[in-house]
Image 1 (cartoon, rainbow, N blue to C red):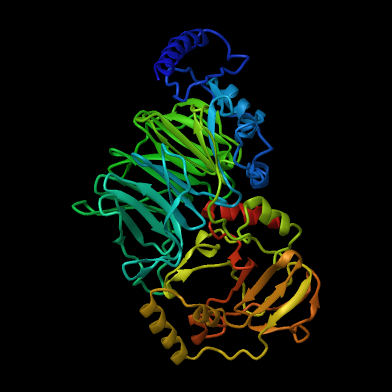
Image 2: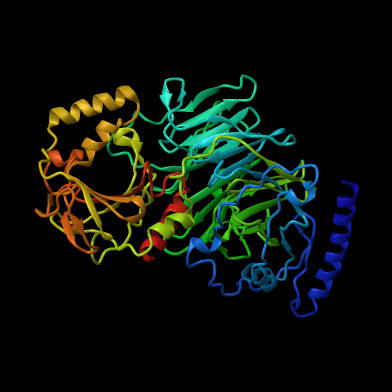
Length: 575
C-alpha cells in the first residue's frame, strides 16, 4: 500500500509538470501510460472534445464479446505455477486514440496489473450488475443475485432467483441492484424493489408495483440509493422517481433518451442514457431535481452500459464494456481512459477501500491486485440454453424482419424484457404495430411446429377469469400467457431456434404443423387476437408480437434493455 501511495504521489507531480508543458505546447504525440488505479484529476485536457472516428466497436456488439473461457483444472503441486488462471488483453487502438485525442492518460488493464478469479464454465454467463459491500461482492446474473466473499475466494451463494418469493410476492426477473448502508436493493422488471437487510439477512418488499391498470406503461430499468432515498430510472416516459421513508417523494423529467443507469452520491444524481437514434451516450448530473449545467463531459460516450460515482470522480463503462472513463465529478472533465479486461460486462469501484472490480463470464477481475490468481472449481452450471450476445448473433445470423418495409420499434416498452402491467408479467418479444391484415412472413427457413387454425377468440368472461387468476397469483401463469397470445404460428429453425408469430388475425391455409417453409414465405396476417383490446374491435391495438426462443430462453432475457436493443438491431441489420 505504501508503494502504491508513493507511485500515486510521483504520478501527480509528473502529470502536473506535463500539464504545464501542454499549456504552451501542442498535444502530446504519445499516450501517457499510468499503472495506478486512481483517476488523474490534474491532467490537462484538450480544448476540442471530439474523439477520433472509430469503426470497430459501434457496428456490432460481437466485436466486444469474448468466448466463455475454458476452465482450468485445479493445479497440482508440481505444476501450480503453470496452471494459474490468466488472460490475454490486446490493446484496442480505438481506446488508445480516444485518450490521445483529448490528451489524457491511458491505462490498459492486463495481467501485469490485474488479478483474476476464474470460475468453472457457465457458472455465470452475462453479469449486468456488480456492487461491493464492506466484505462482500454482489452480482446480478441470469436474474440471480449472487454473493461472493470479497477477501476469501470461494463459490458464490445464491440469494435470490426468478420464481422465489419475497413475502407473498413472486420474483419475476431482477434487473438491477444497489448496495446501501442498511441493505441491498434489487429492482425487478415488474417494477418492484426488494431489500436484503444486512442485519436480518432476509428479504423484504421495499416497494410493490403490481396492482396497476391496463394503461400503465412505466418501465424502470435501474435503481440507486443514498441515505433513506431510493432512485428509480424510467425509460418509457423519461423520468427519475425518488421515494423512501421520511423522504420527500419526488419525480422529475429527463430529456427524451433511452435510460441506461443511475448513480447517487450525497446530493449528486448522475443519469446515464443513450440517444433515441444511434448509440451515443449522455451523462447528466442533477441536484435537488435540477439539471446541473456546470457538469459537461468532455468526451463522447458511445454504447454506454453503467455509471458509478465516487467521492471525487464519476466512472462510465462504455464501448459495450470495453472502455472505462474517469471524469471529474464537478465539471465532467475527462481525467483518464482505461481499457477494461476482456469480456467486461459490469464493474464497481470502492474508492475508500481502493477496490476496483470488473466481471466477465465466469470471471472476476481485480484491478491493481495482480497477485490475485485463483482458480475456483465446482458449482452448479447454468443451463446451456443461456446464450451470450455473440452466441445469439451466430445462431440468428441471416434473419429477416417478419414484416416487409418496417423498422424496429423506437419504444423500449415494446421490446423483450419490458414489464406487462396489465397481466403482471414480462414481455417476451418485440411488437410491430401495423394495420390488420398486413402480411407476416417467415424470418428464416424452417418447419411449422404449431399453427392455430382452430383458434377461438377470447370472451369477456374468459378475460375476467384471467384477470382474477393473475391478480390472485401476482403473476401470469403459463396457461394465461398462452391465451393472451391469441392465434399463433411457431416455426422451428436450424440450431433449435423457434420463432413465434402472435396475435395473428389469420393463418395461410398451407401453414400447418409439419409443413416446411422458406424464408420470406407468408404465414399469416397482423391482428389483435388474444389481447384485451380484441373485445372492442378487430383493429384496436393491432400488431404483430414476435418472439425468438432457444429452449426455455427468449431473445433478450437477462440482458440490459440497451443491450437487448443493440443485439436485435445487429441481428436484423437495422439501425
